[in-house]
Structure formats: structure tokens, C-alpha cells
Image 1 (cartoon, helix red, strand yellow):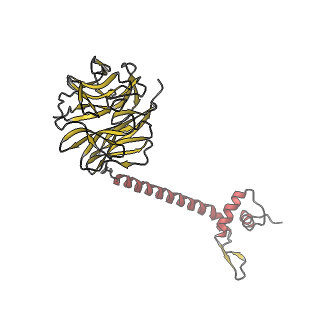
Image 2 (cartoon, rainbow, N blue to C red; image 1 turned 45 degrees about the horizontal axis):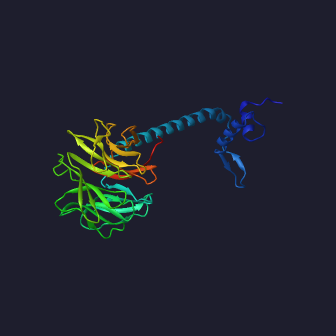
Image 3 (cartoon, rainbow, N blue to C red; image 1 turned 90 degrees about the vertical axis):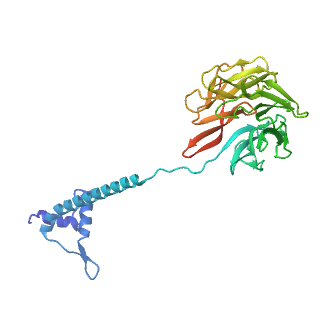
Length: 365
């Protein structure tokens, strides 16, 4: 029997007459061969090319095809990379053109709601919302500014600063925005109201920013809601942000000392016996009592960038950071259960400033 040539063996492998030593090799070859088949009129396959030289030439042809495909793929990949780089160079830097200003939150005594300020059409208007930020309701709609809202301990009224053509005056209203009543005379420029624990008096201060950036003398007073009688409490120097302790035995407040230094001070409930609680070269202020009277929250720029919220013991000891925010975090207010603090944080962005209300849990002592 005549010995089969290599070409004949290859033909038999392609036609499936004998098995191959490699299934993968067979698959490759068969796919290559099927592209070179034609069909007779009865639909049966017949070879288009079956010369032995073709099978000798086939490995070289297949290698060249693979090389060309690889080159084409590399060229396509390079082209896409160049296009992506060009697209990156074309990207511009976006600029923020809208800004929101929501600030000075103060919780209701049951902890279910917050009163706060929101800037609407260039005016500071008062709103309420649920403690989780839902169910926002507008309280004030007049052509005036409204600042420093404070919810009364009995839950029936809100004190605030009414700013109109008559100046800055302390006012109170019902929690739905009705029955606005002004408490201080027009000749007094007054700010930063807060409540006595029995909801019968409001503590406030005179304005220390009559000629900004220079600070002027400011004193802390109290006004009786029933009689409108005003009682001076702390009078010497620049004294602002006064608030009584829950037991009414002490007043925490901010006092400006020298040029650019501010400290948190403590006084007796009648304004006597002043002492410095913070004693720190940085700017400390905005004191707020915890519901149990054992701690005081305050804002300071002690970390060298912006302002953050801190808490300390009522005697000034054990100061510690609550939330390391970026921006200007100020005006802290305790939740009624004493477990968290609400505050405002303002951040400068592009051509404006965004102010938003934040809350932070009190870390374990």
C-alpha cells in the first residue's frame, strides 16, 4: 500500500476521514477550510481548492492573517487612547452658580422639630421642619429679616430678632408665625435672644457690630414678657450670646478680650462673679448649655482651619472636638435628650457661600 504523503493526510483530516491528534487543531483547521468551500447544485459540499501546495502554504497564510489582525487591534487601541486623551484635554472646570443658605437651627423642647433661617429672595425668613429635615413650613413672609430664632422651653413661642426700618429688635411669636410681639424699644439695637427656663423672660444682648469690623461695647440684658421691663445683667466690655443654665444659677456668654480674642465666660445668674472658662488664644464663642446643665457646647477655630464645634464641662474642663467639619461651623444647639448637637456650617464655594444645617452625635466621655 502506498505511503500517504503529508498533504494527503491533511486532506483526510479536513474531510473528517481520520481523527486528528489535537481537537483544538482540528477545530482551527476546519473553520479555515470551511471558508474555502463551495456548494454544488444539490447542496453537497465540494472542495474549491485541494492542491497539496495549498496545504503547505496554509500555515504561512494563517500566520500572516493573525499578524495583520494583531496589528490592526493595536492600531485601533492606540487610536482610542489618543481620542480619550484629547477628550480629557477638552474637559472644562465647572463653576457653581447657585447657593443655599440655611442656618441657626433651634430644636423644639420635645425634639420633634427645628426652627431655622432660610434665605428667600434676599430676605432671612423663618421656617420649621421635622428633626429629620422633612415637612418644611414657612413661618414668616414679610419684607423684613429674621435672625437668631429660639424655641421657648414651654413650646408655645419662638423668640427672634426682627430687622426692619426700625432697626434690630427682639420679638416673639407663636410657633405658627402668628401674633408677633416686639419686646425691645427701637432705640436699642438688640440681638441673640434666648429663654429663661420658665419661659417668662428673654435674655439678649445689644449689638456689638454697629461699625464692623470694629467691635463696640455690648451688654447682656433680660426682658420680662409680661411687663416689658428690661434688667441689665452684664455691662462692662463686649458681651454677647448670653444664655442661662437650665437651673437659672449661671449665665454662659461670649466676651471679646483684646484684639481678636474671644472667650467663653461664666457668670452667676444675676450677672455677677465673672470667670473665664476657655482661656485659649484662639477664638471661642457661641456657648450653649446641655439639657442637664453639666456641659457647654461652643464653636472655636482651634484647629487652624475654619470653625468647629466643641464641648466642655460646665467648669471649662475637658474640652473636646465634636465634629471636624470643613468651613465655619457655629451656633451649636443641643437636642433635648442631650445626645446630639445641631449647628450651621458655612463653606465658601466659587462665587458664593453655602450654609447648611448639620447634626452630630455626642461622642462618649
